[in-house]
Image 1 (cartoon, rainbow, N blue to C red):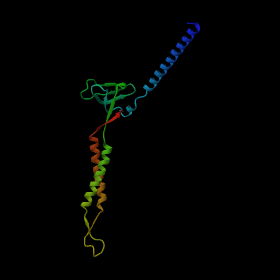
Image 2: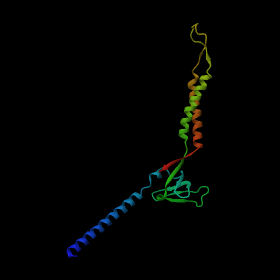
Image 3: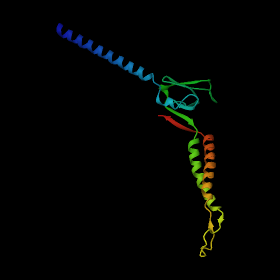
Image 4: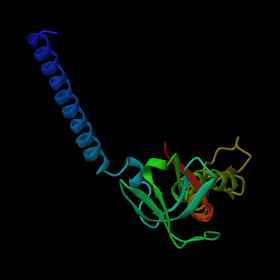
Length: 178
């Protein structure tokens, strides 16, 4: 090889090494910057909420969330757990569920169904009113429908309260990740 060719190979090799190091440094800084922010599902798994975390091996781990950040989710003590705290690094988390109550949806469904039932019962049990007109061709007395709005309101209030209580008493799991 001539000295010129050797110099070109050395310069090309040196340039490739510098570019490779610059690229590696950029990747490390990007991963460090993105690793500092907690995952989006951590907002749903706030402290105190019951969570179930699946790591893909040997089932799920259940417990109240003590702490959730970019590094790990820490679950508190629960029945059947060996340690008082269980830490799962976020890189091993495959699925996350949180336990929520359904009081709001129970209230809405209970109020709608209770209002319908209350209106129907009030319509069936309405008192007969005397005929206000002096029309001799109307031999049947008229039904008073003034109780129907009151029956709807009473049924909606009772149904909403019952639906809310059932929704609070029967919580369910909601998947928040992925």
